[in-house]
Length: 340
Image (cartoon, rainbow, N blue to C red; front, side, top):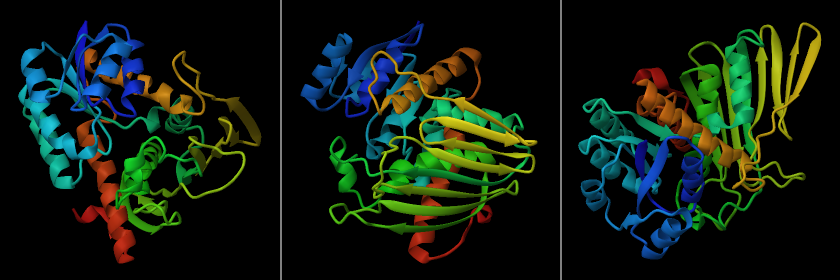
């Protein structure tokens, strides 16, 4: 039995607790949050007897195998380094770090321990997106040369996460990081990047629209476009839509979780709708299912002694794209990622 602790009992943590409950051979035995009411509510809901206000106190007192860090980004570096010092495996929410310096230090701390550090980059683990990734990797459309990874919505994300409206960085840091990560999963690492941003909603501080052009090292070009200012019906939140052209065919992940592959004059259409887990609710069920899937991947990696697909090292490359996108938008420049 793997024993874990959750640090952070905020908006998204309930999904993580449900996810852990659905994985065999894993038990969350302790919780930590500085907010007493939030901590107590989560503990009561999920039957966790031991909970703490201080993470260091919890790590010193508990016999654990791993920690799940579900706090906001400012707390990530000290908590990750604390987990490394305690000799624990860790899974950490995105965005992984506030700066590349912090991110590299966190990865280095775990490199010294030999323990597993995984970033909770769950969008590439959504079952509809995963179906597309697996088809592309299996050569369903040949060698991709163009792609579009799109998330456009008018959904009110601020009601559940009001802090998103106060951050000077919004859509690239919060959502675009997922969409950029999907582009990397589909087309590989990025050589060059150009980005533009806009703020349409006057009641928020950060950008709510971003368009990013990626030139991938393998030769493909992709467009990542994100919007929380798009008013359309039907509302597609929280679906990521895909268009991929390869030298042997095309793939589309359309609204309504419809996967279409055209090749050699034929067309195959599949319903890749995510399952509605017993604890999930629409329209969040797509994201909620991916939480349990990525946590299962983490557990499998611990048991098999291998690195996760979204390891700390891998996520450095996704986080680098976020930083490069903000720099490109601010400077009106094309950023060469190969410059180091």
